[in-house]
Length: 491
Ligand SMILES: [Zn+2]
Picture 1 (spheres, helix red, strand yellow):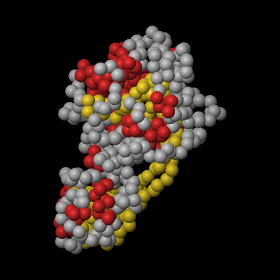
Picture 2 (cartoon, helix red, strand yellow):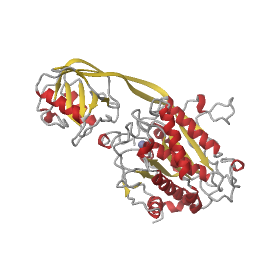
Picture 3 (cartoon, helix red, strand yellow):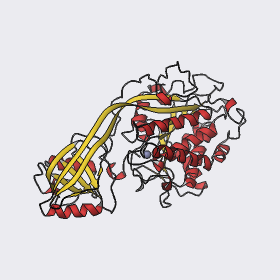
Picture 4 (cartoon, protein in one colour):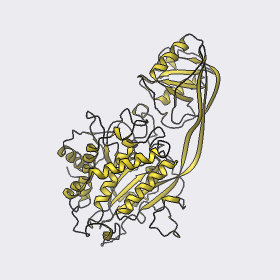
């Protein structure tokens, strides 16, 4: 998921933004598949370019290359849904998680799009897909990269001290010196009424994270009252890793502190004597991101598309969110390789820049012609599918308009002993751009847990057993639909 649930209510506009720039043909350093002719420009494939079976094609192309897989084409053990489910290997999933965690560790603790950790993640999935025999397609695109670079927050008085804090994602830049720290009469700060008409000109506003509005709203409300910056305090002990949800000119520069520090600051603010220095810098630039695509062929043109986002937030390694989804998609791609040919192509997509506005999946959908969009029978999104908290079920995304597909996922989860539910998501993920374009989209997900989007989203935040079950559910869906897409609409 791109953002904590708390900030998601208004995290994204209800429709895709204007089309991003046209595909740019460029060389992508280490991301170019090794097997590719180095003289061949990796033109960004349209989603339906080389990756889709041409019209009327009746023989399996060399994607995946049967000679590179263990089983001869057409007789592989993973030809049936049952065989594909049974072929899922927990140790392979574990290896993916470990590899991705290592990438984060070696690249500053995260894999945020536009940074070396994200590039290394792309290289990893490309290598895995190529090793399975796929001809990997890269879809580069220009997107907006934002980073809060230098920042500082100190209490000047009444008792000077340095402060532990985090910067909210998408915070605009701010420089405030010796600014008064002000708290609203109602801690939420969700409306100007909470501020009782106070004039906050030049002040830093101190509000609780709690309340029935987004942090975006709190920041904008304080700014409209004159505040130059906002400090959000946690409603629990420990630091707060949060986001404004999206960049907007109405936001004030916003940072977050722990519940303990929040209580101290609140007491200081109530004396009327508290003054702070707050500085946040923001770097905004266009960068090139890349989606990774591969396809198992089919006789018809109507494809099933399975996808997961590659990137983490800059706060942590992103192992539950979303190395689990990446591993599930990779594992089904590996086990489906060399099988068939089947009736329907199965396309695998690993998206970049999900955490910064679903930019990868938006770009893919924006680049589709109407005819190409109509040939996507279903998009299946996989995001955070192995929660360690057993009270948190792996859920099936409802309202896809394809109840048969939702049931294929839920049935396999139940057969494997999961308590699951078919529910609407409380947040956005890469299914959004597909739905906005009227392409049926379902998926697997779980509710955001406290460790997501923090440094604690490491291997300990994942149940590998549940990841195996989620992957088996994905395998069941893919195994059925690649031979019979009518199962999509089965009642
Ligand atoms: Zn996610």
